Length: 235
Image 1 (cartoon, rainbow, N blue to C red):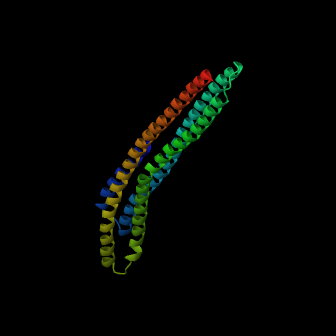
Image 2: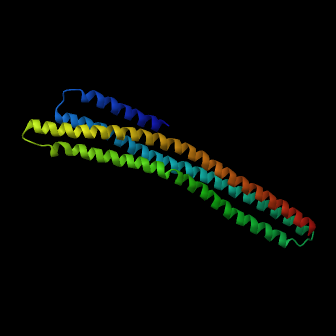
């Protein structure tokens, strides 16, 4: 959230700077430099945001995945321990419990595989949910880079020994880039807010998906333990 506030503050600074400098009697080069500085501020802010957002997404998803995987492993292992204990007790009573054991073992191992696959699916959905928002941020980055390139070309392209002609050319191009800067600033703010909102919702959905997956694993494991006990009882 601090990153978002930082980016939005930069965008506000850009707007204020652009308004102040445009109304001053500056040289043509200075006018272009002001627009370039504003564009660079947006560009660097977006690059910082995209990098941090991508890193944070992976860090959080990997942490969530590790915790969920540990839970799945512990659930299955506890169930296997209970099954093994029941099988041992059944054998002590002289019962033939091989079918009970292999049924329980095979089902629990299969559930382990399926639960991990379900976990991976939850994580993958989280990554996919962030693809479009991050792609929009990258598009804003490309737009800022294009605008910066256009600004860099103004003075060389308008170079002339006739000052009035040069002035007219520069001011004409600046009027166009000024509109582009407003658009880039507006779109950048929107993409940052959208990406941040989607990021928060995505983490909630991923956690919900994993909780459901792990709960199903727990219920299944308990049912297998109960089945094993009943199987041994009637063996």
